[in-house]
Image 1: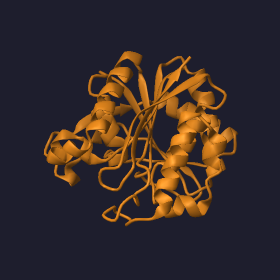
Image 2: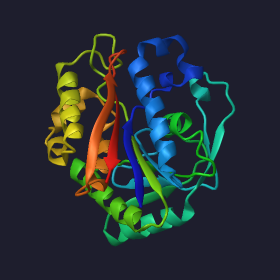
Image 3: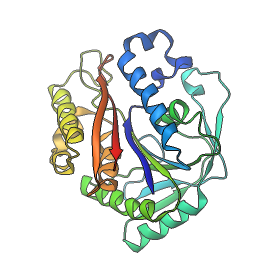
Length: 263
């Protein structure tokens, strides 16, 4: 069963041991992530599914990382903290791949112990108090928006049929083109895209999100669109109340923290 759903940024700067002084410019995001951590802890999930944009990707298939143990570390960003270890939910991964293949949705299994930062950041910030929680790292594909939505709808079948309490986190940053010093430079489409995402989340409107033109999405230079589409597919026809906990773009990159309250 689904016990928690959220959309989070994954900038390593949010993590204290990496961001340091830069965190002073991200106070809204940090406060929202602290609140989300409390909400996740209260939901008592047994498994956390993280949909990331920085793991292994295939042009024509979605991907699940299946390994006997995962390590979440931000050493590549200068974090000297000891890696945090997580274990997979083997049973749910098996159910997932069977359902996807029955539905004709292409899935590839890869195996690596090191989690990407798109998966590591939300886990390090949100799951530190969840003892013995299992993790399923999922990566999106090069397929189109509708295929990502359909992938999410199939995941929903698996999640809702499971007796386990499951949290789903879509991990991604919004436009990287919101100011002249942004990673992608300034593009007017960046703010247009982030506003479209904000409206989509506020209304849980998959139709609004799917209406974004490929040109707009490409110009926005984001890494959250497809993970969010998967989450919207999973939430399709469910009774949820969306809440945007924060949005800011201190470095020309849009950071949104949102929770979808269930029931």
